[in-house]
Length: 421
Image 1 (cartoon, rainbow, N blue to C red):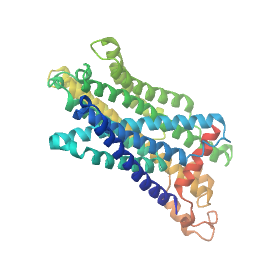
Image 2: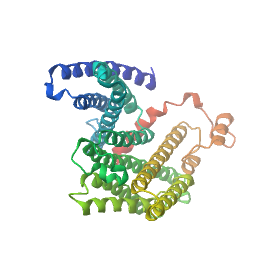
Image 3: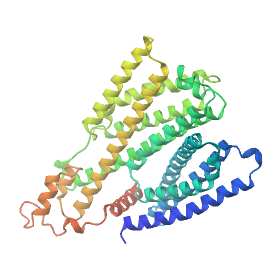
């Protein structure tokens, strides 16, 4: 069996095991918990913890299984770096699964009422199985697009749970800080969402910057093989990368600060984190063409458009025709939307790099073309496939159909690069 078929088979096995564990654990909670803990909300918390635990353990097993960096023969730094990646990604998946599961359970409970508790064991079993299947498959085929797709589910689920369970019906008339400026369950859920969202942004930023470094180094290696005249160095590349990493990290830290310091007990720290987030977001979007010149013009234009729209809504709030909540919601959605587009751009760069590396290793395209364009030109590939005589191109002794699985190549490339960092 190929890699994808083996992954699907292992995912189905993970589904069965996680479903059995989820059913047993939820049945034990329903049977053994005292009456004081049998409230619907507490049962939903227990069910969400079980689902998140099954999914997280499945992800850790799948990600560690596919990684070659954990081999004891590798250097300790490569092993430590891979362990950090596993723990960081496990944190993202655990928090996302918990909040998504709790939001879904609360929504269904509002529709069905008390009778929903009779199906809680079956629901927990099914959800645990699905979580185990999805996380194992995603761990085996992990890329930046998968990471980017987690963030909106995570944030929307957390804010929705906080909004549905709050006992303050007037919070929307003021600002989002009022939703988290209490000691209730809803406030803790909202603040926890902001904290974990900041952590997720830092983690995804780490993978994004790592991919930019990997792509740049590979381009340099290919150009050096063509001689000094083929240099593709970007001026002040290290300084640009440091600034980009610092801004992305600080934006995530600002989210953590807003969730950690509630307004009432810590107004100065809360406002400092919120205002710093706005400033860093604006500078990041404005300076992005200089910070990351590898991206397309569309993402730069999207950032400028987002700043313009937020500016218009901010002027409306200053004139008293809009609420601060709408301004904050729009700014947050603009940043998260841009961040998702940014992550998908990084994923596209990674996919182009992997394909170019595969074709380069199999003699489909020349090293010069591979070094000049990390993406794939359709005309170049077609010409390489049809030119069997070797005129103008390197003879093609490896048809496209015989190219190894790109995911396997990607795993080997990542392991090789990680061992050299």
